[in-house]
Length: 309
Image (cartoon, rainbow, N blue to C red):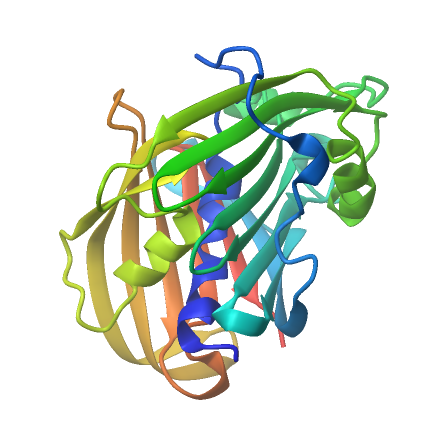
C-alpha cells in the first residue's frame, strides 16, 4: 500500500532535477550494463496519487530586491505502488518558454522505484548554459537549435551501483509537456553511452528520494547527514534546519501543522553544494506531501513550486 514515507520522497526530487550533473565526467566506455533488459522505474506499478504544482520564478538584478513572475512553468508528481512493498515516484518539472523570461525552456524528469533488493533510477535534465541573469534575459536564441539532455539510467543493489550515462539530442521545441516523447528517445538505446560502476559502501542509501524521506522523519534532528548514490556517484545529504509550524499560509489558503525543512546536497569529491527547502504536511491526505518546494540555484535566481488544488 501507499505510505506516508513514499509520499514524502517524490517532492524532494525537484532539487535533484534542477541540480543535475555532467553524466560524461570521469566515466569509462560502457562494458557491463545490459540496456536491453533494463525496465524503467514504476512501469509495472499502479498509480496511487498525483499532485500538480505551479512554478514561480524570481530574479534579483540587484542585491536589494527580488522580481517575481508567476506561472512560468509547472511540476507534477506521481506516486505508485505494487506487490512486495514496491514503491515508485515520478516527477517532471520545467519552465514554459511561452511564459518564462527570455523564452527559457529548461526542464527535467526523474523516476525512482525501490524494492527490497534493488533500486532503479531514470533521470533526464536539459543542459543549461545560463550562468548569469543576462544570459536568461537574452534567451535561447531563435529556438532552431536541437536540444541536449543529460540522461542517467541506474541500478543499485545491496552491494553495487551501476549507471548508464549519455547525452541525448532531440529536435528543437520540446517542452515538459512532451516528456513521453523524450523518454521514448532516451530508452531507444541508439545514443553512445558511458558506464559507471562502484561498490556500495555500508550505510550508503540507494537513491536521493529515499534519503530525503529518511531526513524528513519525525525524530531526525538538524545536522543529520547521510550519503546516497546517484548516477554512480556518492553525494552527502544533510538536514540543515527543521521548523514546525502550527499554521502555514499560502495565498488565501491555510495549512495546519506543517514542517519547513532545509536541506543541503554536497559533493564530497569537490566543493559543490546545493540547497533547497521543503514545506510539507504532517496529517491527513497531505501527510508527507510537499506544499512548497524552494530552490535557489544562483544568488540571482530562485524557483518556487506551489501545490495546486
